[in-house]
Length: 97
Image (cartoon, rainbow, N blue to C red; front, side, top):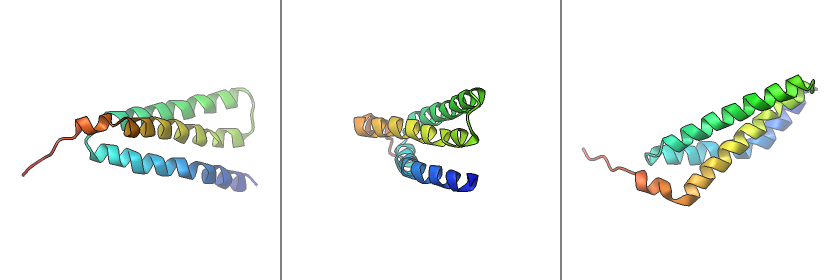
């Protein structure tokens, strides 16, 4: 039963994970590495904080699983904001050999 719930939670987080992989990789490839790092750290802190809160409240383990959604949501919002702002284009450097 718990495995089924975990798979459903992962299914909900997969579109957000795809945004993180695609947009985060695009930003890093363009030379803008600071914002993807900030997004990763913010997502990690969100996941850990929510897991602690749910654990302290005595919530079922499925709520701890659900912290994945919060993690990927924070990352997706930060990365999409940065991408749509266009500020990453100013950080690109052309390396010529």
